[in-house]
Image (cartoon, one colour):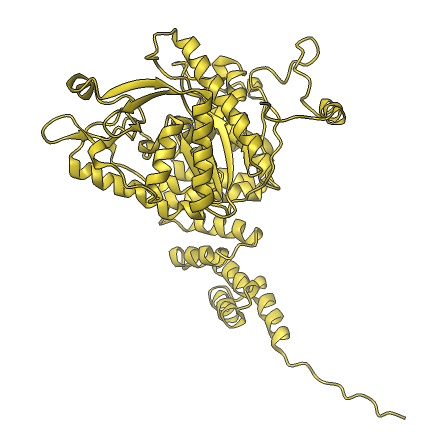
Amino acid sequence: MPIDSFSVDETQANLRKPGAIYPDGRKTRDRLGKYTVVGSQPSFTFSRDDLIFTIGSCFARNIERKLASLGFQLPTMTLEVPAEERVSETPNEILNKYTTAAIVNEFRWILGIDAFPEEGLIAVSENQVCDPHLHPGLPPVSRARALERRSEIHALGAVLPKCRVIIVTLGLVETWFDGRTGLYLNGMPHRSALKADPERYSLRRQSYEDIVADLEAMHDILSSHGNPEFKMIVSVSPVPFKATYSGQDAIAANTYSKSVLRAAAERFCTAHDNVDYFPSYEMVTLSERSAAYADDNIHVREEMVSRIMELAASRYVPGYQAIEADTAKWVNKDKPLLLYQDALAARAQGNYEQAVELMKYLDDTGLVAKAKVEPGEFYLRYGTTLARAGYAGLAEPYLARAVSLLPGQALPQYKLGLITARLRRREALFHFQRAVELAPDSVEFLHRLAIQYEREKQPDLAVRTFEKVLEMDPNHDGAHTGLARLKVRAAPVALVPAPPRA
């Protein structure tokens, strides 16, 4: 049975669309190259006001970090487990879900559709257990801690129905099955469990039909328990598995895994008007390997993730502008300290576009620390440079990060106030108030607070604040002008009697 069909007229129209012709190396050398770009047609839009719920393989964590840096709200990033309970530095890697069956299970548990099966916890010693439905590499913990951690994860069920956008990344099809609970797991059980009870567990490779059924189950759950206006973006993770238990060559086994997931995703997306497929898998795997993957040939480079998610934002978020740069021409590309100095020099010369490109590269590639600059200072300069380059919407999240990293400093609050005021956000008033609290002797900050009071239609506070400015600087032209403006607005309007009728 075909997944869709097209009339003759539709086929001819489709053939004329951009990207319909596969790139011919004799004619087009830019589409397939170091950073391959694949077209897509979003069926909906979203904004920074929409909550985004991400779930899936480790690539979902990459997506989270980049979207958060762009100012989007991701509730899953609020979950942080202690460092001793992690495999890497990612605070919420405990949420990684590598199979579609594991995603379905988690949706049902966090939304309270089913109770989490406590008998599914695997005892690995007298006092410690493993949760096979979480990241398979996590160290064992006490049973009490395992259940406590489960409660922390299930608390996300309260916010999931508020999330309008659900991003799902599909990881692999090799799935471990627990014969005692009748549930698929998130990875291979602890080796001690396999040794103690080998009959209990088995490895199953899911089929195309299995994956489609799981995707449909996710959609059904979200339709009945999620946001009434939810939209899904489905992608296939470009991260291969490290090893296969199937007996095949790992390359062949990974190809089967990704092919089935990709085919099922296409079938699923064509069946639902509120589901899009985003081709991050194709963009990574068809780019130059050295640009796309880290040296382990498994994990995707942060710069590649950044490019992909900025492209996604430019397609889904109205008004979003992606920033591109030809990094190959940079003399100091591999010297973070010199690259940052180049950015500061460009900024000082008023070349804000170039400064933005350089700072963006340092941030995207995780080289800020190697540039020997404090993160708070970096994001303050990056945010203000974006603002001067005309990217006010992009500047806001970076200045917000500077505020969080430098909570006791007034300047980040003031700069964030300027940007949020430019974007007509109500929180601008709070940032100006906070800046004045932190730097009460600043005439500049106090004057801008008075202006914001005026804009927020609080004339009494505006007048008092302008007067405070004049107490500090009697010759402040802006304060005199502001007071005069407010007095004119407050003056009663004289009523002129109409002339008598003849």
